[in-house]
Amino acid sequence: VAPTVTVDTGITFALQVTDDEGVVGPSDTVSITVQPVPGTSRVQGQITFQSIPFRTLPGHGLNYAGMRYLPLTPAVLVEAVDANTQLVLASGRFSENYDLTVPTVTDIKLRATASLSRQSPDSLPHWQVDVRELNYAGLPMGPNYTYTTEVFNSGAGGIFHDIRIPSGWDTSGALIGTRDAAPFAVLEAVNMGLLTVMNAAPTADFPALTIGWSPSNTGGNTFFTRDGNGRRIVLAGEAGVDTDEYDPGVILHEFGHYVDDAFARSDSVG
Image (tube, rainbow, N blue to C red; front, side):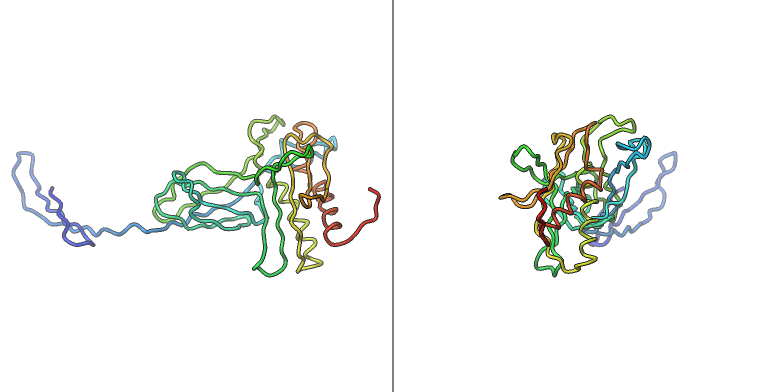
């Protein structure tokens, strides 16, 4: 078989067929049309995080056996990153499902960032909420928490690849990995607070808010504060003692202090 390229759109193969005794049979010509590989591939999927519900019996703590993956409703930044060059190939803010266009046949990974942002030049409402590694001990704030998927190939046309952010706990309450879902669970609660305010004030201009969460934050040390570093909510994260990232009631209580400070006033000595 001796292939020869005839035109850009096809390849011609001259085929010679022989029988078992080596006798050459008649020749035939087969034309194969070569379709160009598309330049881009559509990558899409669901964004979920592993949530741990409250334990109703005996009435305190978390029900690790009831963990399940829930759609992430806040619109977070999702980036497609080239696994070899680390360059961002595409990005956008997505709620529950993402949809990105990237180069074909490329090894990529997806990175979700624990932040909510809507700023100028977008019309009101505006907000900027970042979940960063920050504790009450006055240590410097770390970068925004992120979660990065494993590497996969973008394919030649389109592919589905879900972003599933694990909690790092097993069903018995033992820590078995990084607590990746915690910052996104915090955003889930904060997003409820933002939507509640916007129901009353659709064009609210929210001041920037930093949520400081860290596994090193000891139990019982959850609070709102405003100082030279801006408005901050610090959440406890001590494993086995007080993990406020899965307690929306506590988070929204502190968010209420933020709303009070941002849009109203309080003469409370507390």
